[in-house]
Image (cartoon, rainbow, N blue to C red; front, side):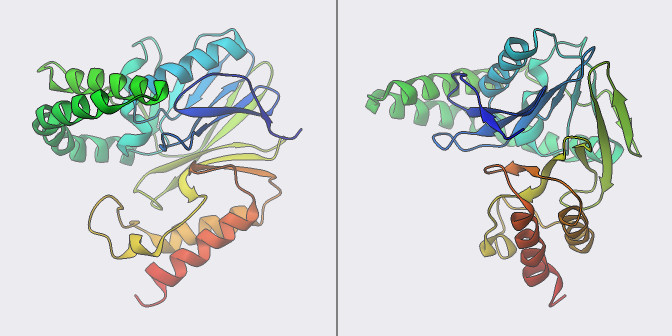
Length: 279
């Protein structure tokens, strides 16, 4: 089955059904962010990653319910970066959140600093966003900035907090449903200290989180802001090569459009060139 774009209205992502019951939310070009997915396993609905904007997360939950007629059963965080777990708090406590132990430790360690920074920036961001909103004529941009205002007001609230994972794993496991099954693969140190992927062997589909990007940029290797250095670029490269050699047809990156083996090989060469070769 080829990826099929579905009719679903969201500012934040385009929705694709990759195979029966396997859906990818691919960040829309108008508001670039991270990707996510959801899997209808029959008796379980699994969400894979949330997004940076809580309104994107709400759209993701809405889409998952619309196309599966189910409530989410589990949420998987592929790693600890905010653009993949900031929407955790939108899920009710009845939905358990699963991550690797390293992802939880890193989230606890780094997010306190990030939240402090966010709270300090909130008044300035509110002012800037209000000014931008006054200039806008595009209905989509107006909606985007209104959502941003709501989010910054939420962050400014003294009671604001992020929901961290509830359950941690240190090894791979499989969720077996009545309709399908997904293997949650623990990769360990690669893009971050505790990366997780989701694999459908039979359907030849792999959700790779930020282990894979559709496009890479040499400036990442010299940037001091926004692009963290991989903790283990050799393992990251080896993982990319390993999965490029597997019999998969669709790879879902953490950012960018759906990928093929070509992008995995390009990513592997990128890490070799800028992070491995001269170190």
